[in-house]
Length: 108
Image (tube, rainbow, N blue to C red; front, side, top):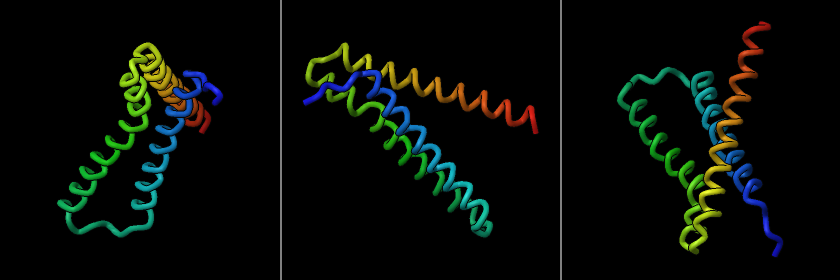
């Protein structure tokens, strides 16, 4: 079996987080654009809290599952490296997004 670089695993995990966040953002955009305003604020708050818990589980699984497997196999250095690469790439994507938004707003 071919061994995958830890940095590539971190990149793929960060891309998974970005894709999931884009999916949830698209869901909110769709709901805001095409759904009528809900009559019950309670149901909206309940939906948002359930989505928050679900999102924490999904993103936690994406970020922590593989490092946890490595740690259980006593590969602590690799586990920390994958985790660090994932966080590094997420920060990089956030900075790229902030920069892109800055340019969009500056030239519009």
